Length: 307
Image (cartoon, rainbow, N blue to C red; front, side):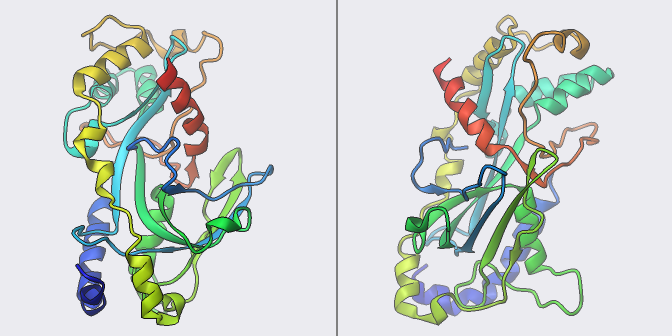
């Protein structure tokens, strides 16, 4: 799709975006470590942060302006970390998801606890233009990839399908009729919280200056790298890594010792995402999707790769 076609077809694409967003929100990385295409807001020592971005439309040849994928991040009883993309992101079987199903369906509460601690972590990725980044002003006016979770995606959904009659739906990815997004980060009970983030008043980016908009459009990154099978390890490689982290014999897919035994080991607190994972039999996981642990896990991802 050329820039001219983007402008002429933006109205007809809005319904498609709403339907696609509904589809993914009713269902419950490629590695980002060191990727200079990725931007994230900076937080101060108190855990607070503020930035303004603009979500950007899909690149030519891509249907949607976002992709979603899952990964797993947990520490095993061996002390090793498992930080890997989940093959379920590309429609394939994944050994950790299989293990979680075994644990969840065992009928033991302690096994369900372990399954929750190892659940999938949901990520979305979109192109964004950084409007304001007070901590890193050199980023302002540049196009980046922005990885975010369910809480911010829910706010995108709310902008397209507002709950109240006095609110007009907008397409936040539209150059002309979208809106800037104000990211407001707080630390709430030890968790990073995005609840106060919000869209600004609807307005044309760069006042609709088409030469500037086309310049931005031509800088969009492809999102399909995050769903390219070449960026995912094979099932066998992931299973081997999982077994090593969990300290079980290769090929064994049975529940480990009960959580009461495991938790007696020192320094075994799990660092995991609060995002809910859908399993086939029971979906009673706790959803704390307002919080985010990407920054913590990005550090442990490096350690996991070195192990």
